[in-house]
Structure formats: structure tokens, C-alpha cells
Length: 255
Image 1 (cartoon, rainbow, N blue to C red):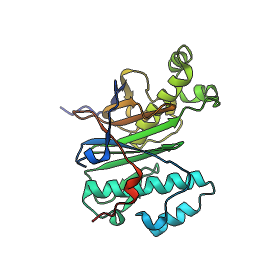
Image 2: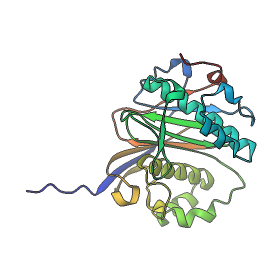
Image 3: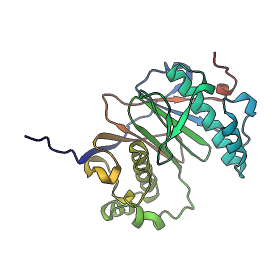
Image 4: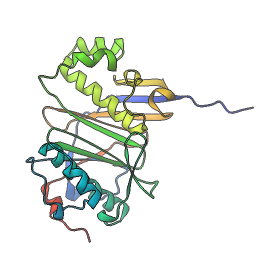
């Protein structure tokens, strides 16, 4: 008797009831799943000499024309190296990153820790876990005409749900859930994006639509007023921990 080929995935979407942001000092760097947030206080990136960026990353940072884009990249890359080093017990400047086919960063030579990055406005989020993980944050811009993307990015039922309720809030909540999931699976944004589930509940979906099989969880959580965020991960027993990083991260030298 031949085994039945697995062709579907099961996705559970929900909003976390509360988000307890802990201080970085409380992090043991062993949590199976954690999300870190960092508020960029200004648009000027730190001195490159005070970061762990490597020459190729510094060159990439200098190619950004807008100061805010350059600042987000520098802060995110430094934090990514620092956190990855602490989780893998390596020096931050020794971490080697690779990029998947959908530009998802991965830590080379480790099959134990998975990472993902997102930034919007003044916030940078980094997710690290023992299973595939994706994170997304969006600034809820009051002047953005989100109605223009509903038809292409959401099913008819999802559109009706969004338009019948607090439309702008639900648009951003739904969008971040979809994007976090396709970042976790490595599918990326493509023509199948509208079929990616985002409403509360458990959904069964073909692997070709999200790029993976198995059980997946997608959780909305609170970053701060005016922002929506979600984290998606291959299901495991537990819920993510949340930590706040501060500017002191750039004054610490790893030893």
C-alpha cells in the first residue's frame, strides 16, 4: 500500500490577546521562537565603525539614496548579526548569510535557527526561531488608498469582510498575516498571494499556493499605535516571546 502524497497545508490565523514586550536583558537567547523590535529614534545611521556590518554590507548601505532607507538597513543588519551571533554562539562579524530564491535571509551552516526581518516607518522587527519563520510590520498610513489593492490581493470573501468592518485596520492586519506567511514558507509575493489565508480560524490550502505543507500558525500582535504586525511559523508547542531592543545594542562589543 503506497503512502498518500501530502499536497495540503493547514494554516491557523489568530490575534494574540496580549503582547508582553520584555527587556532585552531578560532574553536567554534560547527561546524556540522570539520577535525583537527596535525603534529608530532618528534617521541618521550609527557610525559604521560601531556596527558589525561587513564591507559588502557597508557598500550596499551607501547605495541607498534616502537617509531613512539607509538607516533602516544599517540598524536591521547590525541587529541581525548581533542576535544571530548570540543564538549561534559566533562572533557577529563571522556570521555568513545566504539569500533564498525569494530574497529571504538565512544563516549559512546552521539548520537549527531560522531568521526573518521586516521594517516599516521607524520600526525594525527581527524574528528568530527553531522552525521556518516570517515576520511583517506595516505602518497604518491614513492616506494610503488600500482599496486599490483589494481585488488583486484578497479573495472576494476577504474583501467583503474587510469592507464591512474597520476597513483600514483589517486591511493592514490581513496584509501582514499574508506576507508573514509567504515569507515563512519562502513563497514570496506572487500571483497566488490573494489565495493566502488571513482570516481568523483554521484553513486548508494547497501547497502550491503557499509553497509548503504541514501545520502553520499566523499570529497578529501589537507593536505600537499606528502599526500592524504578524509572525508566521511552522507549528510547534508554544507561543513566541517578544523583546524590545534599545540603542545600547550599538555600544556593546561582543566578546
